[in-house]
Length: 446
Image (cartoon, rainbow, N blue to C red):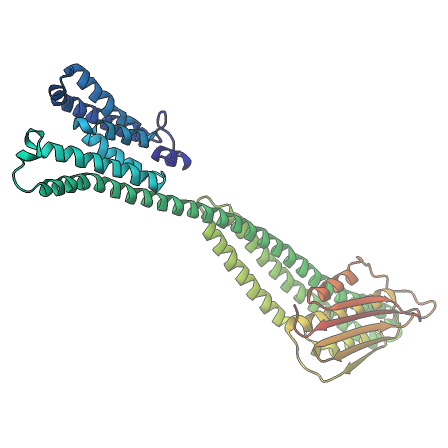
């Protein structure tokens, strides 16, 4: 590939014809004019020595020297022209610049070596003959080998520097091109990585919204269900037993305050996530932002989000609060029994929170669909897992549910919670007409 070809391959071809840039065309035309003038001037003594017309010799020099304009397009042809006019002792600029251009291109090294060797041999012969006074070795003062050595040294000194300089410039140009291509590839990879990071951040925000919505459903649905049950009890005993009605009213107030507190917490977290999402989305589209900066920003946002999730998980409910949860259902009139099997120990916050929410949602469903049914809650500590089971008996005949609305997402949310940690979840009716919910969660979530 010639120099102009390399420039065109880099997408910067703006000059005329085969030149990549206008300044390259100006440089080559200038060198061609200089070479043509030199060869034309050297054609005068050549015409005197050979007896050809001076005009013809000068015209030959102009054509030969002007061929240097084609050095980027046909570097081999330019060097061959320089070799051809060497016996006429013309074309110094033509040969020097031609060898440099040839060596700087992607021409195979054997061709460069061959043409450089031809230039050295031609230069040696021409120099040696020019040293012979009268054209005979008998007229040479001193040893003949000295002239041979001097001619060879002169030929090498004139030929090798442009060849070596061209090889260096060509190698440097190829290295720069390779580095530029590698940088462009890295830029594309970073852009793709930034896009994937943005997609992943959007997916993570969606997952967080789903998780928060699930938390709000579990917390609010359970509290409100108990409040409705207690409110019905207050209505039933308000005239018969004012003391019990007052107690149930106090329980309703406590549960309402707890529900409001947890709801405010959930909404605060959701608002923080929304602000992060808006800032992340706007920053990704900021003008002038580099892909590497986008990747770093999304990575930092992901790390901050993970840290916040860990903090939220540490503040969630624990298995040790199951007794209190069951006690609230008992206070609402449910006949519920809690049994614990195995050696009691602690687990990761997300594991304990998930097990707690499964029991909470299952008790909420009993309040909704099987009010008054006897219920049993089992918690089993096993080797590398924890298991919970909530099973209620069939509701008594003629007993109507609490009339609470159901969105149909309770069992789905429980299954999603458990399977996200690599556990198993099973739910369904029992042979006795009741309903059973079972979950097994590994000690170390995936």
